[in-house]
Image 1 (cartoon, rainbow, N blue to C red):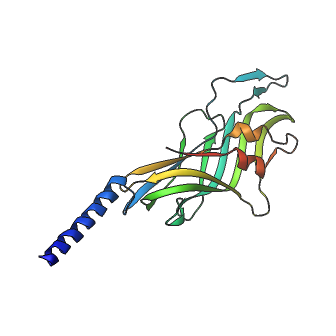
Image 2 (spheres, one colour):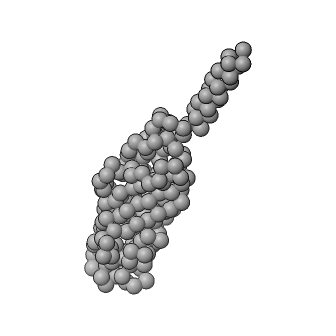
Length: 206
């Protein structure tokens, strides 16, 4: 009888553990991790003025696109850093103004778990402005590059809670927040410092 009781008790404990795992959705199995990107938060309004040379100047909101290449990692206390971009950098082109939906950037399978940090390693960032953007140091137009330092990359790391549930998809959104770093650019060299870019980028989970 005692042996039977012990067997039943052990079975009950295992059953409860399995139920706990199913309830949270993060115990065992794998999950789909999706990464999207956008150039900025879509502004409520913007002003574009004609220029004497026949072009146009945008006041406060960048017009054009941003091309970038990056790798994305997520971190959990149990598994450490895990790459979402499948061991290779992904590329994307987004609207600098932030209008429209976020662009799909990367997707990968990860272990179902609770992830608490996101790291994005940018290997290339160029803004291609189709209209002059008036900033404090002058007018920006054409290609504006983030000035990568000697390691040729910019690492952006943020504390973001992402719950990857077994059999489900979770989503991370990288907001390049272009207006913030473009407005700090050097209009003469058409470059942006690595620090200004790093500080501006936002990362959220949905």
